[in-house]
Length: 253
Image 1 (tube, rainbow, N blue to C red):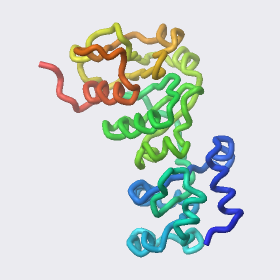
Image 2: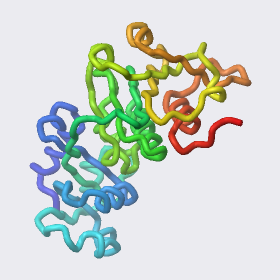
Image 3: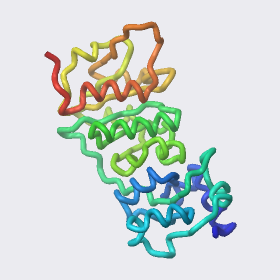
Image 4: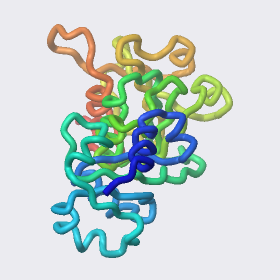
């Protein structure tokens, strides 16, 4: 059974300031919880789960201290869940520790003003798929550790390092970076070879990349458009671009 104090604490983690204070995030549902426990079991702060889930996952939870697990009823899960339809298990995890980001001999992502938490989480998941380990975000990007963003990452949140900073100041202070800006008027993506090193810049869902940051980008790339759609979803654009530019993709003939 969950206490009122525990329920109040979990509900407070819907707000960024409390997640930052505690250096934690919330994840929900069997698939993502299983993924996170398998990847970083030591990061678990506390687990709240239905009896049926606990019975099914005895092998997964056998090394977790008993005081970190609370068995709860469906009604209790509904009280603390951030989902419209709760799914058996919710857990609080410590945020992954981050060290200095490494950009030499690797392809990275830079996100400028991504507002939607679902887009943010999906971009992180896409980055993980293509082996991208570093994502630099502008300070006005959605919080990657919000419940909605975490759900969208499906566990990739612990395998990708994130940094929130002033992008223009960072770029101007860093020599040698090659920035590839996703725009509507650049070199066609199918004419660009896979990159062993560089930074792909994805802009705001409606406004694109800010003018100040765009001025810092040495390259502009464009996804070829055949139909009449005005633009692409930021996460979709990131997936298409990385499918072409990520190291290991075949070069064009």
